[in-house]
Image 1: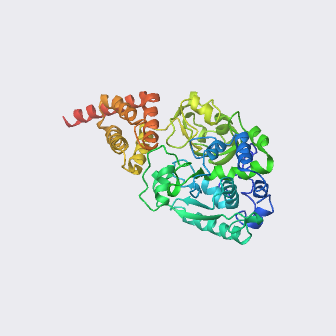
Image 2 (image 1 turned 180 degrees about the horizontal axis):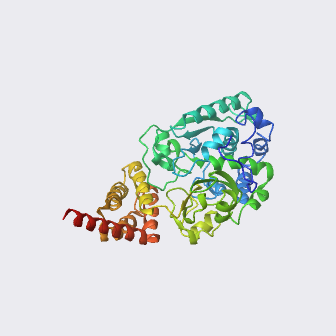
Image 3 (image 1 turned 45 degrees about the vertical axis):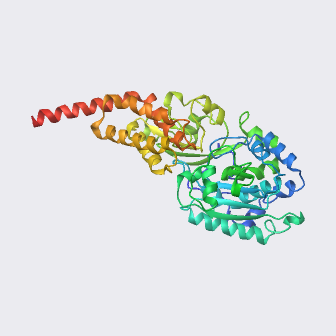
Length: 435
């Protein structure tokens, strides 16, 4: 079950079975169009499957928004090496809580999507990499895998096709860094979860140095519906070049927080007002972090925007992981910036100097500034530190830390200046009191 009441404005595709009794069981899945898609896929060539996905407009739901069909097409099938399917279920981005619902409520949908990916590149083995804190979800997915094996959807000679495919869960150890695809692969191989230098990309040199399809939980979970209903149907649900629906995780200062499945391109302000009941307690909207904590903030006057990858990029932010954090008029932006950088400083793997040192210095400066010891030069220093991290690290964690901090300072400079003025006034008062 979901933790929020569904909205009548939702379009239920990947969440269609969430509210059914025993929704995680294979019996419920089979009774509601389950494992229909793989039967269709087994009759199609890899090229036809990839063309179908390209036509659907499905883009990666993990954050980057790369076209899924194109990504699958990059995997070479003539290298002589085994190929692998890997699902990134290491959901770690603050503000994001959708993948856990997919695994908790409909694990067979994820499994079927991965089986289709396996057939497409004739892989014989796949892994679902689940963050260690999701122990209860690993148990749910493991039970679903056992059910799929028992019914012949995994294992030897799947549905009489002559093709074998095995699927396993693998637990992470709680590192945010392992949400980055190459660090995830390092961890999967039993090594320290640090990023690889790219290229080569995982499609060519991925798991165990072999060609690999690596997608997010929601991406794989979206695949079966496309095979059942067709690419045109799926594409029409969303906006141009942004097909389908997306699970939107809405938290913060709204009346009805929750995870809602909305068409790609749904207006942000309508999501807040009509789906989430507006800003709570009648407060005014101040800002929205639209794609998890790593996405640059939008001020209230910038929030008249469609929730798809291209529209948010045009607004100089990101759709990211789909985690929307709504902030009301009373929010202390300096405090939000400090909390954000504390997370990234803690989660930096330390491999790159710009990230390791940059996040640490940003945390130090913001802590001093927040606690009343700020200097006027600190405001520009914070922006300069963030700018010097961008594009200079092995993986996007450095950018994920720098982009939101830079945006907070650039868009809410008046609040940083007000905090500085408040500090000076307080210090003068203390001087007068204590002589």
